[in-house]
Image 1 (cartoon, rainbow, N blue to C red):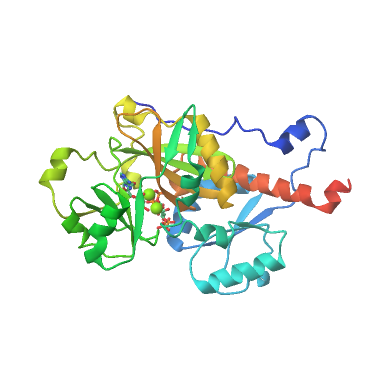
Image 2: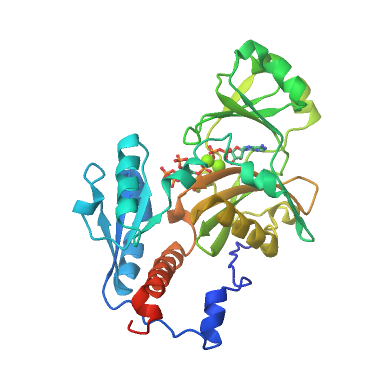
Amino acid sequence: MVSGGCVGAEGEVDPEAAAVERDELPVAPAPSRELVVGYALTSKKAKSFLQPKLRGLARKKGISFVAIDHKRPLSDQGPFDIVLHKLTGKGWQQLLEEYREAHPEVTVLDPPGAIAHLLDRQSMLQEVSELDLTDRYGKVRVPKQLFVNTDPSSIPAAVRRAGLSLPLVAKPLVAKSHELSLAYDPTSLTKLEPPLVLQEFVNHGGVMFKVYIVGDAIRVVRRFSLPNVDEGDLSNNAGVFRFPRVSCAAASADDADLDPCVAELPPRPLLEILARELRRRLGLRLFNIDMIREHGTRDRFYVIDMNYFPGYGKMPGYEQVFTDFLLSLAQKEYKRRPSYSSGEG
Ligand SMILES: O=P(O)(O)O[C@@H]1[C@@H](OP(=O)(O)O)[C@H](OP(=O)(O)O)[C@H](O)[C@H](OP(=O)(O)O)[C@H]1OP(=O)(O)O
Ligand SMILES: Nc1ncnc2c1ncn2[C@@H]1O[C@H](COP(=O)(O)OP(=O)(O)O)[C@@H](O)[C@H]1O
Ligand SMILES: [Mg+2]
Ligand SMILES: [Mg+2]
């Protein structure tokens, strides 16, 4: 059996923490009053995220979660120290932007503009692609992909021109739509419904890695994924195969008896660089990366999906990670205040 694994980001040096250690900055006392975290989430998300264990631990640490009415101005509610949100809709975006402008002292997780980058599968992987990460621990790439918004009959020619090889994973442009399919042959490409992103299918042994990011913390879990496709499958299959959400919670692969070459977690230093760079480039603190290892290699990885504020309720130890993260934000905000630097804090 391959044991499950968690990756922490202890290797990173926080310059502020280092300064405190050297006694160059006074240590900020924990905020003496309660930390109020307003949340604007769907009821499904509130249920999966705000589990009793999280609420209980938060209460012990002086954090309270307060539901936000997404139809009313935020300034009439609260006051909040932190706002957590995952709602779409123009009305909400507008209310949130107005609130951010009026209350720069409140940490909004995360800025709507930065989130928008992950809501569209065409822009989602752009930073990973530009980063083109290669170091001694491995390479991280994006599968060759093509955005199509043309007449379906012209898709085979567009695919040929772009030099993409079959089979292709067809993904709706809008990331919150999860109706994906696999197209094995050119004719089946004409049955697809644009706008789509077509991505080369990469064999990876049926296991993928969910890399969860919460501020500076990183945790990784294994999930079952699509099996390899071989030459025989390619010549014997035709058509478009819709596939269900293979990476759902029920399919956690952390306790399965897996081929160690397939199941070995991506090297931690590689994930640390990847997460740090993406946090910085995207301006996001709450997201996840879906990664696969090219079958038959040890160190060639592909990022296939990224999600804003994913299903953290399934991340081992998320209660501790999240409450620590929220407290660290409060500390940072406290240190930014003028009263802190003038020594009155
Ligand atoms: O519902 P959950 O807990 O499975 O979380 C979904 C995520 O599942 P996972 O983290 O893989 O377990 C899911 O991740 P995947 O896209 O399946 O990789 C999405 O983040 C999904 O959000 P949205 O539908 O894209 O807006 C997430 O849905 P929301 O909870 O945000 O609605
Ligand atoms: N390029 C790819 N190569 C191989 N498998 C893929 C590829 N893209 C997606 N998959 C499989 O399809 C699943 C869903 O695709 P993903 O892009 O993560 O969409 P979603 O947002 O619905 O999770 C992945 O978890 C993985 O199992
Ligand atoms: Mg995914
Ligand atoms: Mg997704």
